[in-house]
Structure formats: structure tokens, C-alpha cells
Image (cartoon, rainbow, N blue to C red; front, side):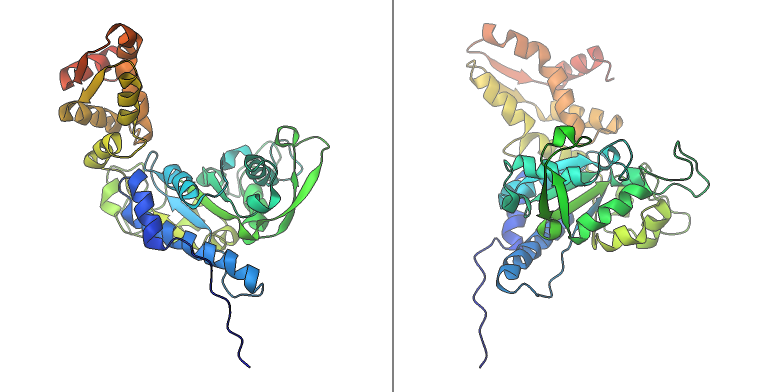
Length: 350
């Protein structure tokens, strides 16, 4: 007699996840589609395991490649918010090979556990974002470190990450602030934790002879929709075993001026909406001219700051206005390009 499997619980479709991401993440449509699909498949796998533990669906961790300030962390953080999952972000450079001074890779799982108030079940289904993955690239065989020829902060960390990415039961310290001392541990299975790794790979080898595709190159946007070959990532210094556990590779584009202007204005959590609400509490109306926003964006692009640098620039522009805000109740403030240029000059941006 054929047994019919019970239907899966209702989960957001890739399109629904994409549309929610689209509210907060400007541009990077291809990356949002890939991440949304991977998250959907991951959810199906987690739910399916509850019904059929020996299912065939494998975990699909993600590798995001793109220049600074293009939205890698932003995509991962908003994905966790949309799916209502525990989330933690860490830098790969914080970790060392087990047995050396520094954080063991299990500490990143401990940080996720900390975010859930020590709820092991919730933590075992969360999302861990590992930034600066390119900074732990394997050094050349002839390189020497303080530990002789051992690469304790590069290849050693990559090797240590393998068990987490693949999915193993690992002992995780309960006290993340004293991970180098004796303390209590808890056993967590990382099989259902989605790992999203990211890096700039600024001097990545060319995909084609004579083509500079590194994200430090001037022609960043000319490489749109071209997938980085695994061979290039191996030559960069990522070991094959690590790449095998990051089967989904997404290449993000450098953001255009128009997209950066949209980032300033459109998302529900945009910096301009934040300042508008702050000043409204002092009964002040705020408006930025388009020309002023374009000047802000041009400054961020010139300094190679990407979207991440927009907040700092706006903070500097608004500093005096925010100081005087309680004394200017009832006013309507219009920020034009002339005022922005003056402030940027004073702050040594121009």
C-alpha cells in the first residue's frame, strides 16, 4: 500500500521572499532571486526532515561576491528578518585554527545561540553570515607566519569551517565572552543552519585573458551577470572542500548612481526617512532636493564607499541642523545641492 506523505506546512514562496527583500534591498535583482530560492529550498529541507529524516535534499549554503557597500550583509540580514529566523553576523578574520589564541569557529554558532536566549532548537535553524571570507584565503606555500609554515588564520580556518558548513553535531560554548576558558558546552547540530558567506575578492584573477574582473577594477559594472569560475576562487586561495560546501555562488554588481539615490529615499528604513521622522518630532519638515542627493551619491562613489558610506555622509551634512533642531520648531527645511556642497567641503569630502 502506497503511503502518501503529509503536505508541507505553508512557507513563503521564492517570489514572496523576493518581493519582501525588494522593499529593503535596492538593485541586485539576480542576487535576491537566488537567495530567495535558496532560502525556500532550505525551509523545505528542514520541514521535510521532520517528516522524512532520510530525505535526499542537501543543504545549500551561499557565497556572495561583490564590492564593498553593494548590499551583501543587507540582503542576509533582511532575509533573516523576513523569515523570522535567528541571525548573527561575524567576520572570518576573527577566527583561528583550533588550539591557537583567537576564536574557534564554534563561537559563531555560540553567538547565534546567544541571540536566541540559549534556545538550542531555534539556533539550530538560524542563519549565520560570515563576512570577509576572502580574507582567510590560503597563503602561498612559501609564505611564513609566526607559526612557521602553518596558516592558522587562513587555510586552518577554512578547514575548521568545513564541519559547520556540511552539518555536524558540535560542542558550542554557552559563554561567548569566555570562549578561551573552561566553561559549559551545549551540543548543536548545524545541519539546518543556513550559512551565507561573503567577500569582496578585490584582486580576483581575470575570468578571461586580459580582463580585469577584480572588484577594485574600474570596469566593475562591465562584468554584470558573469559567474566567477570555481577555478578562479581556488586560485585566489579558497580550498576546494570549502567551495564544495558553498554550492550557490552569487555575484553582486557595483551599485549605480541611480540605485544609490533610490537607497537614500525608498526603503522603509532609509536614512532620509529616519531623519524626516526625527525632525518631525521637533515639528520640522525636511525635504532633500534631487540634486542634493545626487551630489551625496557622487561623493560616496568617488570615495568608493558604496551604500554603506551614505549614512556617514548624510550624518555629517545634517550635524548642525540636528543640533539646532529644538530651536527651529515649525520650520520647513529644504536641503539643496548648494548647502550639501558647502557641508561636504567643510568636512573635507570635496
